[in-house]
Amino acid sequence: MLKISEYLAVALAATIKFVGGPLAGVAFKLSWWETSIFSSLGMMLTVFLVVYGGEIITKLISRFRGNKPKKIFSRTTRIAIMVKSKLGLWGIALLTPFIFTPILGSFLALHFRFNKVEILWKMLMCALFAGSVQTWFFYFVKSWFV
Image 1: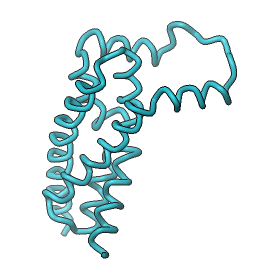
Image 2: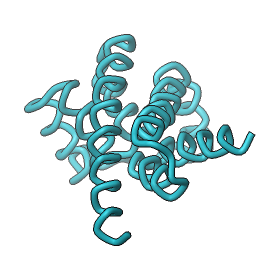
Image 3: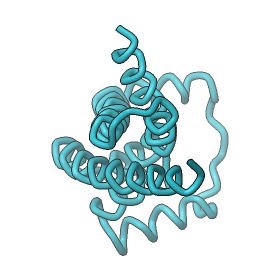
Image 4: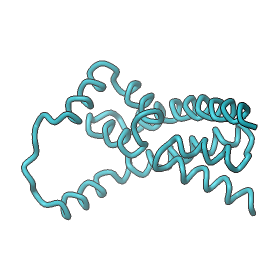
């Protein structure tokens, strides 16, 4: 039962900010592959919920925010458009675990109207890659101090 709670903690840490998953895995002294897999699963849980529940979330947010006039070209909008035009969905998917949060990366991919199944597959591949890289990095850094 304790192992399951550690897995859930790693997955939940990765749902908000991906780097939290590998950090939690190192803190719980999980194996390298357990940390990578459950960090990726946590990110994919967020991506799945945003991709298939994003319209509902957007409607709820707009109901509470009201209709405010938006700046058309804010700094954030320009960065998002630059990433999309230069790198496409692969770029968004690859930058999501490293720079963006899983929520922001998923909303960006949806906002630019990419196919939902394609979003899930590319985010999964990049989550597995980033989970492996970040977990390896944190275990490597931990070995310096132990």
